[in-house]
Length: 634
Ligand code: PRX
Image 1 (cartoon, rainbow, N blue to C red):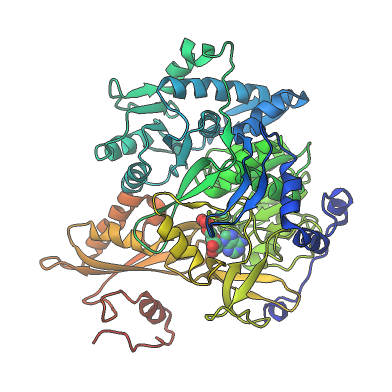
Image 2: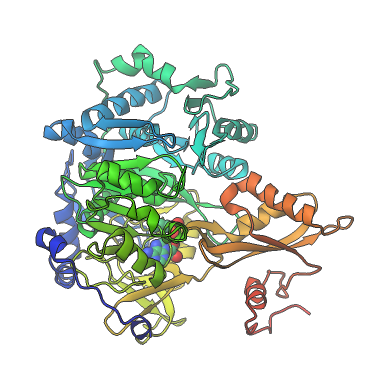
């Protein structure tokens, strides 16, 4: 049992506990469970509503739950307008450092001004409530500005991670039917330029809906600007329309229904087609702000750094919306953690006096291998709490993070959640005794369990499927354009219960230990990729007849993609072709999807109905028993 494998328990830090918002995790779980709707309503009252809700939860059309029904608000109003009416207008909202060391800072007043101007630009291009806008940028301040401006005018943003490539971008623009793309000429990563605008140009050759492209100048290299379609961000922001629509720097914030869509975020599932997870203004706002405040005990004077990219849910919830809702100061860094040296992150923690730091196990493992000397060169004493997300953290990395970065005094907040959940679901609070490798217990108001195949809770120590048994405000509302898939994927395995796609164990103390995905999703360096997407990228190469992708353990990345390829007649396996195929996947999907290894095979194991049996490939690669082969084709 995990509890016996890692018997160590780390009690709460007395310094953190002295000021912690929540003094007892168990008591708060109990309190929330007595009246979940009352619990969330209390949290929702922390925000400004143009009209209060009539009903906290409407579960009359399960699993299409609605929260704060009849309520009217706008998340951007609560991120900006609300703060600029108070002393917080002078507080730093965002501190940004570029990879080359440039620094830009925005007070709440300044950030609001930029968002107002940009929202007027969007309006002048005809963007209105409900329209979709695709954002494909590097990590620059204009990215959160663009997201907030969309929310302000009631448009639905669809941020596509700037590390994705042509095919991924094209598919996401097409599915969302966006009219506008906001991008950069390029972004800096590891001293090199990622040619974002060129990728947009290539993707747009195949997209019919885009009318306008707005380009932030970041890297300065020559890019094509198509007359009448492409505009420089700075030129638009300088136009009178940006400044003057509502007089001065103001711009009206759209009044939104609590259930109006806020954003789409594409994520990988079991099919080759990524699914657009839909989140809304009201419930998402209440969920992300509450979880950030309580799990990380974020205080008014703290400086918060979440190292994620805003192109992922972690960045949406905990770089942009969560911190801004709390009126916190958020730090954002553009580039690679090891540029130009492996102390880059630690030097910025020292330089900016970061108090609460949130990153991923893969990054910790990656930086660990450079040794302690790098962090030890820096004064990290401002740190109060540390966090991780994205995959299970191995106890060795946990201990290193705790000892070397946190100097033994910072709790490690290991947050389990998903693009779909919008907010932390299983996570310690500062009051929770910690066990390295366990995300501990559900957040108050959340009920998690572990089921066997038949839907019965498993005994302590046994592995099963992680499920969530009650709705929560920041939950996804549907898959955009595909409500059937929403029902089928998440609510059908166990009727009335949300199926997470993860396996887990619970120990004798009720601590949850997440093991990993049970579907065809692979976590590579914390990034979520579907095997089917990699396979379809491979099959789009002229030499490939069929392909299968699996995830195998990798020291730093957690998992890496291994692929098996059947060639078409007339093509011969070779080292050069393997390299060409890797590059092809990188070009189609983005560098993160590049397979670690390509093995050429004459046949793939398939069921009689023609489905590739990836588990057989996986077992073979690991030298494990191949399991039940009764469905394997002759
Ligand atoms: O398998 C779990 C893993 O990441 C999946 C969700 O991926 P994504 O939607 O990309 O969101 C990542 C950021 C929220 C989950 O199904 N996962 C996430 N956090 C943890 C985790 N596995 C173990 N421990 C975690 N803390």
